[in-house]
Image (tube, rainbow, N blue to C red; front, side, top):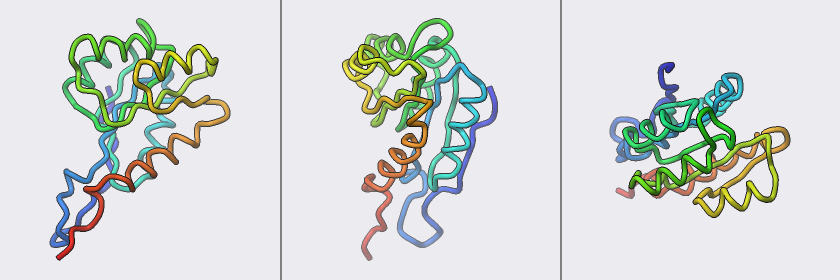
Length: 154
């Protein structure tokens, strides 16, 4: 596993914000190294974000999400040792806290996969070939919507 990607946290000394509380932590589950690296680079472009872990297989991802408790989970549909659907079901069955945002990215954007993803708790479902940039857009939007990112009034 490579080192987590990190952007500078929000909150400069004296601005009234807690940098750790405002950081958008992200766990990436993707079995394709080039796609995983592209997702990490996408996250690096977004202020106040940090990749807290990554995995290629369902078992590693389950343990990684459990231990890192990310705010966002980005996962592929087809994984080593199973699927994104299987991971989401195992998370629910074993009591792993669901991240506040779950994004599925896939090369298999069928209606059945889309429905199954949403039924298992995915908030977004994107085709890697035509909608990859939407991952960045959703992360930016989610980061802006987090109350902890707003400056505290004096």
